[in-house]
Length: 242
Image 1 (tube, rainbow, N blue to C red):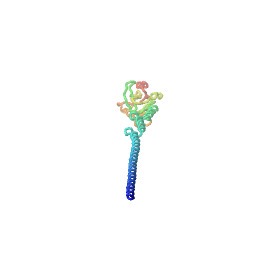
Image 2 (image 1 turned 60 degrees about the vertical axis):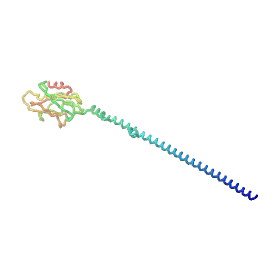
Image 3 (image 1 turned 135 degrees about the vertical axis):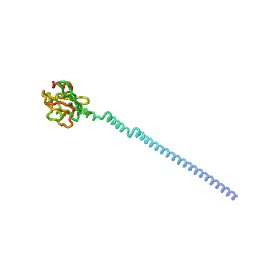
């Protein structure tokens, strides 16, 4: 009887140990499964955070790309300013400074010098015959004439320096573009047959005779020549010789 009871007790003990082992194994497997899911979830969350951070950086970079668009140039605003400068200094319009300088030059025109002028000559029949000299400013020049030319002579001969037939200085004439000024030259103011023959007339409007105008005339007898003041109207030139 005692032997059977011992055998039964041993069997019951083994069954109990087996049940405990099964419970322990099940708990271990459950814990492992839970740990694996947690790790996977953490990895997914980390991936999401990385994607979010990358997306944020890309947005910033995209904004930079848009702001520094090649078509717009850096900072856009600077290019607008440069464009305004380009329009302001347009070659066709010139800068504002040039406009101001041109206005000053026009308003405060300087006295004409020989290098500023082009001269032409024409023989007139009125008042016994005289030469009408026309002066025009060269392109881009604005200058003034007043009174009589500084020196007029025939053939560079000091004996033929002309005297002024008019009194006073007359009006100031501004030469610009096509505007012209006129004076007359009477080569012979005497009634005698005396005189010298010349084929050139020298005209200087300033003290410096350099670059004086040299005009061709037909061979003419010169004796005590006379000149008029500068006039804005060519018809006024003949008056002093009448």
